[in-house]
Length: 551
Image 1 (cartoon, rainbow, N blue to C red):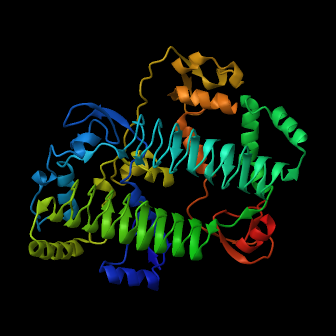
Image 2 (image 1 turned 135 degrees about the vertical axis):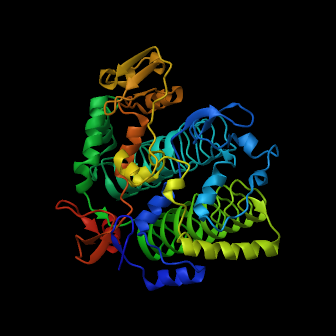
Image 3 (image 1 turned 135 degrees about the horizontal axis):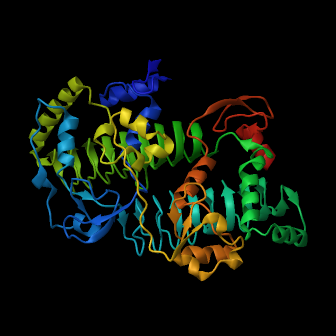
């Protein structure tokens, strides 16, 4: 048993871990898996956006880097153009100084990509996004249209306030659901239509407050109703009224959660796996939110990755033999890389694309045999790389991801603060950066407290688009967008009373934690691992008992 150098928690390094470390020729970690993940996450800003100027064309842009950053930031067009050369910023490696110190100096000189938002139309306020159209404040989303306030989702149309949602339309507040239509507040549902405040439904229509049903219609609290009875009950619920909607929301998030058996973990078509929200995986250990992966460990939010360990936010193109990486896609044999795509044999690189055999480089494209953005011959690179690794072994840097101290972001700008929240004092005491956040000044005709909004969506005037609404919880002002108002009216939903950031935090609380707890199956009594922490009222079932219950 090891004790983590950061949080002092004990953690195991088993034989399979040691085999990986020996194969990669890196030392065993001194941080626990959570602290390693936290360190990686402190390098990823997804949703903290700023208005600033491009440092090359001087045009107005949206960026994940605040205007006060000292390094250059280029808009998408300028970054991918041939108007500049990242090799001009190259430097020699100094064996009298640490690697991270020299990498930090390079970071302050090399231009960086303002935001990751490719091939999108009318979707300027989106990040880590690809091929979106008419989207607003969606992050980690791809191939989407007319959607807002989504996260980690793909191929949705006209959806709002959603998380891990796929191929759905006209959906609101759905999490971990797919192939759904005109549905509200669904959790782990598939192929459902006109369903409300429900979880674990497959192929259902017109269901309200239901769980663990398969191809059912006109059910309320898992009891069948006639079409006429169901429609009357739904009409009487009148979810277009804010007080009625909030009552249903509070019931779903509270009392409802213990009314029906809970699946201990979500694993679909998996073999020899430990973790939750796993699909089509094999030999996966201590992993969460992974799809099509094999022989990986200590990873979260991963797609198409093999023979790797300690990764975060990887996917869409196959990656293999990786260690301590975040935000990468289509990479092979890479260690400690951030936001690198379609590369091989990279070490400690950031924002490198279609590059191979490089060490400690930033913003390279189609390069080879480079160190600190300086070009070398194949033989020179091989020799210098070997010597740098020896040097980093002596300084204790080799095998560790980039330190949080040199991250280009403040801790509270990153996803680390979403999964591992810390106070300003705690962050500063660790020697990390904290950034005071200020809301954008809104151009509005008036500001109205949320509790003074008309209760019914039918009473909301078009002029609300010119108002600022004061969040009930934080008092932060926010605006309703034109497409957003159209969505609420179409689904007959009330105007939300909380700022989009608060709504996201509430949605994240619905997500199971990325950890497992020891429990017993409520039906057969077997010992199981569950992503639910057992309570006196919970009915947690092992996979076998859950399937017998649901089918």
